[in-house]
Length: 399
Image: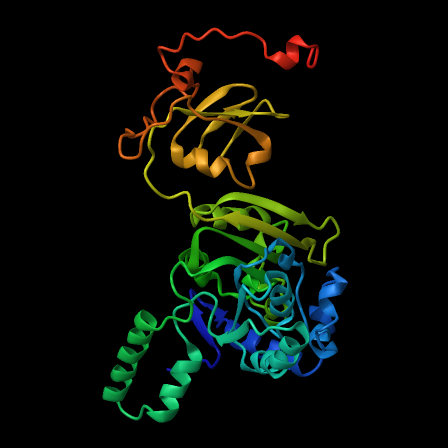
């Protein structure tokens, strides 16, 4: 039987073997690290004061579509997924200050070499050295590829037995010396990189982000999304895939990926009205999404309530709490603490109980109860106080 090279035959039709996505991306950005790739550029306004210390070569060879660095705070431990030439890392270094730390992870050795080449120079100009670059895949933040390459160089695999030994070495390294440890970073940023990950690995990518974040940590992700589903014909185009187009999440699927991975407080911070590119009638545009980790854990009753200020008649959070405008809504202590922080606190009135419940005496919160909290639950059933108007009001100060 004659074999067909580069294709399979199924149901009488030829099916083209898909191209190697990782290799296409690797080569495209390796070339982009050597000379500026204009087709990858997406106009973004950065704070000019942070760019003064960054070499022009780094600025020219940056291929981001947003500025997630604006969501950082002093003292943060930052992880940049797909750090490329290091532009966002060098900006982040200045924002977080000498008490903070910045880790850039990239799979492309040519891009890493570019970033590392200027690492000391930029640190000297800033006045502190708090940036490091590590090689790895952003969908697998346990495997340290630099470490594995050193192991392979010192102990080349030349037999099946050696292959199995190396597999054990890889697994041991992932467990004992992960590239990024569990719950070790305050905030994850990424700039137009998630779309480059293979479709079957995108779910694992979000799991990894959730794993390495500390409880209460957050993400700020800028990426390209599509307004319609991208057809397979476009996904098979290596030029479009490596060009941040055909691997893009559809708008709603991008948000859904954060939800399904356990993030909360998900907010669309930026949505470009003008598409970056349009291909076959499908619009591709830059967005920035922020989200938080830390809603996991038991629910205990502390007689707390929240009141939604408006303007909507009612809203629903990621855990299906329906908050009606002007109504005292019963929540557990865990939810109350979450609502007391960004991004919720400005839209809510937080009502603490008149008498707190001592630690260890709180009962499990009854999630099946009515959502409305009666005032006596917060004040206390036996509360019967009568008060007079305050002195300032009697003096005409508030009426």
